[in-house]
Image 1 (cartoon, rainbow, N blue to C red):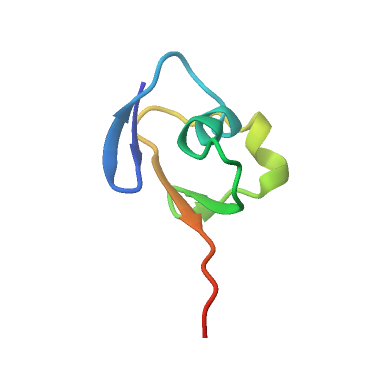
Image 2: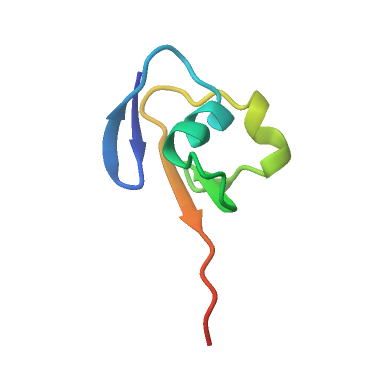
Length: 66
């Protein structure tokens, strides 16, 4: 399946859930926010959310500072 993740085209095998995709992209399991087609997907919904072909996904990490 073709997806766009953080502006880059990505090909995935099969139809992974958003949680499975995140485990591939962020193996350390750091805290992230996920936006699919301009809508935030809550962490509790990621395991049951299956992206569709051509979805635009943004994975955002938190940064501290001052």
